Amino acid sequence: MSEVALSSMSSSLQDQAKRHLWMHFTRMGSFVDADVPVIVSGEGCYVYDEHGKRYLDGLSALYCVNIGHGRAELGEAAAAQSKELGFYTNWSYAHPRAIELATRIAGLTPGNLNRVFFTSGGSEAVESAWKLAKAYHRTRGDKNRHKLISRNLAYHGVTMGALSATGLTPLREPFEPLTPGGVHVPNTNSYRWSEDRDPLWAADAIEEAIEFEGADTVAAVILEPVQNGGGCFTPQEGYFQRVREICDRHGVLFISDEVICSWGRLGRWFGCERYDYLPDIITTAKGLSSAYAPLGAVIAGDHVAEPFLHDKQIFNHGFTFGGHPMSCAVALANIDVIEREELCANVRRNEGPFREMLDGLRDLPIVGDVRGAGYFHAIELVKDKDTKETFNAQESEQLLRGYLSGELYKRGLICRTDDRGDPIVQLSPPLIAGPEQFEEIEAVLRPVLSEASERVESWSSLSRA
Image 1 (cartoon, rainbow, N blue to C red):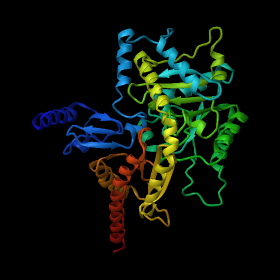
Image 2: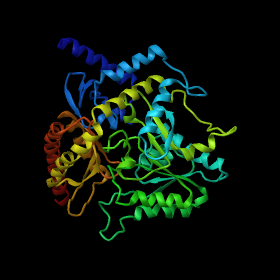
Image 3: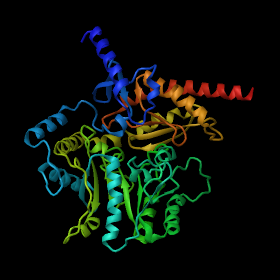
Image 4: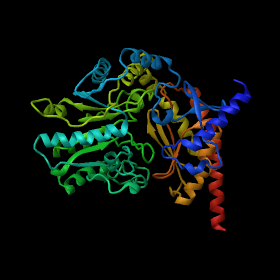
């Protein structure tokens, strides 16, 4: 395509985007005098914008595109399915692809997690899991069990039920009052813990919350294997085993929210396998289809499904497009790729070099902590490394949105800068990535974070003056 044609297409897309497209979680006013980033194609670990510029997708398009971009076989699977059966609902009916995918998933999950309830995405999966937990207890005569315990700063989605589980105040406040029953406890971010703190105190805080709320009112606990919100908080050794014991002791269901942490992201099919615990329910989405088609799922243990399998019992819940035939066909093809190319093993093999590269940035004054697992890591930024002093709201705004976010993108790296907890840079590359991509990431991160450090030092000098 000629430069003139590219320019014309770009102008047209920009005009239309600014006039008609309402983007998610986006300050639309940011684009009054600036271009909307328009991504038009992708291949492997890279995507290209409307001007033909290449970017390393260090976020897998929001932790989604696990097998990388440009996989034609997934589109071919969808096209073939559309010719056979474009759509039929799972409301009182089944179709082959939903049956096959549910069976395939059950063959990969640990323990007795054999019942698969499809949704259209992650928030719907969390919403459905909470409803399932409440309905499960009700069928057993525990009609008061409705509360859901989650962690501070955790992101579990933004539908009204999932939002009650989400522990991020700025996301919650505009939509209050929320669905009743959300309870929040401390997370596992030990970066600022005192050295003498019991490493399992955050797990024990869950039991304290259950007892405070009244065990007969708590339906479930929902936790991510590695917590996204706040920046890739990993568990302490024994944390999930203690949580499992607590849930069993109080008759509470344990939901492992793996919308991000499944399908190889942590080097295993499911994150709970990475940390050796067995939940009652898993929620998943994103990497299930590598986001080539919208799809999520609730995967329930046989014991959770059992009360609904008799007489006139019913889990009175569903979504029109949950388990869409074309989405299921895409997911089956996606799992084929993960298996054939041994992508879980690739993550395990390269996790060390990935983490070593990120740890190498600790010499920069602004890098306070590096944490995460598999291909899911975060760098926490600090104002003072010795005291671990963080940034105030104005400084964080200036650092992240005023410099880092735009500069990283300008230099060809897509990652996430976030300050819904303390300021972080988050990375989640496609599972096909390796040392070549790690070198590219470091080649962008080091100079940009070095410049950020100098800017922070200049702020400090001005404040001292």
